[in-house]
Amino acid sequence: MVKYQLMYSTKQILQKYIEFYEKRGHKLIPNVSLVPQNDSTLLFVNSGMFPLVPYLSGQEHPLGKRLVNVQRALRLEDIDEIGDKSHTLGFHMIGNWSLGDYFKDKQLVWAYEFLIDELKLDITKIAATVFAGQENIKKDNESIKILTEIFNKYN
Image (cartoon, rainbow, N blue to C red; front, side, top):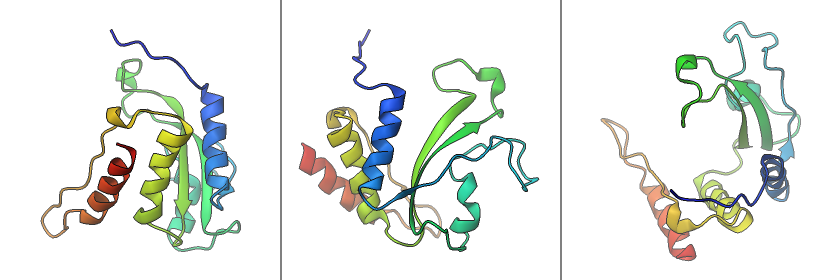
């Protein structure tokens, strides 16, 4: 059995995440209620992107183009499987958001900087997956190039 040493509490990880992205110009947006307001499409908020749907659709956000959040979420789709190693009911979903400001070139680099430099995770125990392509959608060669550079940097 593999033993892991807990380096940070959940609260510490969430705080580090927020601070990491605030240093990169992101503004913290507040949690919304688990019961959606003015939206009849959901019974409960089930993702971190829920509060941003109008802004992801093109509306301007009052705090700008770079945002970060820690959103409480609840998922009931697989409630019968709750409690095993991969199913959970209530959780915090963290996210950093670019509303037309940056894309993969910054996002991937920052994600791995957070995991490796901030949380001190071992890159040799991290795997990356990339969209392989499908019918009329090309393979994501741009992400492969960026991820290759990231993994070469840390190895």
